[in-house]
Length: 399
Picture 1 (cartoon, one colour):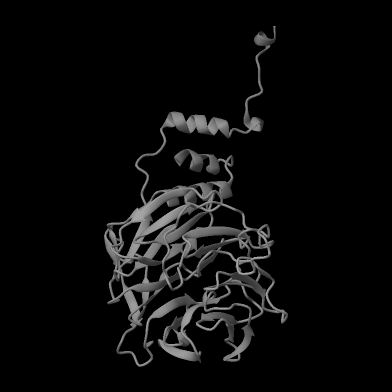
Picture 2: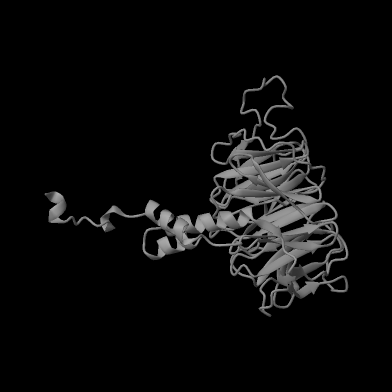
């Protein structure tokens, strides 16, 4: 590491390569941090976590008790051992608390002054963070499993909502109404996710084993339905055709560049798809235990090489290399089923929520020792620029 910094200082190292290398090293050394606690507010399981991307400082959590908590992740005390404090929360005594389990929470992508939450009480609420009151509430006919706002949208303010109905609802923050319905699924929609690359592209996953990609500007239906067999299986079996998994699909996650889409199903499989062509890349991740009837909140790293997927798996978090399927490590620390995890991009940290009511922080282990002078010198020689090499020779040697 010291050699890389020295090479960067004298202009021999690529800054992007150095940043990616260090981010990758930190992810590979994630461990449960015994010096960092997260204040325990929830009395039951934690279903959703979200860290805002403006500062990377504030985290939302939503629990089975209907409670929503806002945490400050910054260590203001500067002490080695500290607790991430809850700076505000919507408790059971709050007049606008969700009546049933909160399934999804999400910060407004461009400002921490607003966040959203959806619940089994059939509502989606838009919250004003400063006064902790709903600015708007959307009501639906069925249970709400998942919702998502586009992280890159500049021309629309749509929130995609997956409910017990097979219809995907699109709610507009500007008009305060459900402005559009996407029809195509046959059973409840368990997960929704906007592309981080194209603001009008939406992915939806359903209990009918299908994953659909939509361009919400089109009224003629979905762009494509992902097929795990890439169209090679006999079309005589209409039920088996164009299914992404052999069970319910309850997990969706785009890679940070939006070029690939990860899906998780109750067939205990995770698949990686090319989001442009809809092709199954056939990466084998092995068996991933998944028996949840609700949405599974996995996440993907950003800025690493290679990128990593963090997947809740029973009481653990499995870390996979996205493009090879290799199981890198398994993070163990929870006592019950892990429901969600969130990635902190700035410091390569993971926060996970479980049915045991705990939020755990997984922090990169510090480097034990730096490189010695010999290894630094050899590394610098590998990166040496020929233009800086001494080209002078004495007249004696020429004779």
